[in-house]
Length: 129
Image 1 (cartoon, one colour):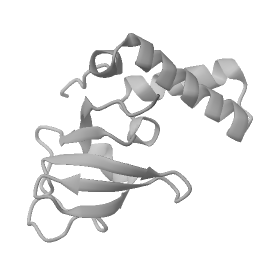
Image 2: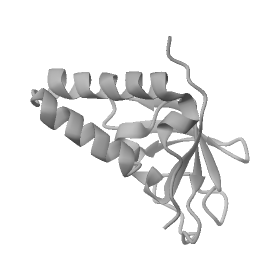
Image 3: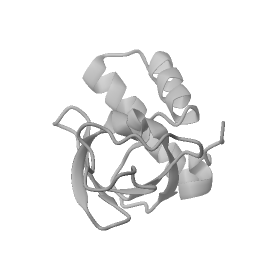
């Protein structure tokens, strides 16, 4: 398995800590998870490159090596193969984890965040204050 880049190498240690803390706070506030369990869940998800936790506006996700070219059911459809790269234009948080993405052909679509499972985080243009 190809190892994804640690997020601190993509956005720096300060921003990585800020991102993790924000995710933990969200779990504590919205899901009433105790702080130690929330930190454990978020850190595990980050280490496993879980797109449900990691996917954010401004990221580029690259198709993992040796991934089958099997197009997903509600992703980009006009091309025979899945895009090699997806740029996350917007995360629709209130829409059950859906993303607006743009592929390398410039086509935009809305996909389920779970469709990034065959992709790995490759670049992150930090857009938070």
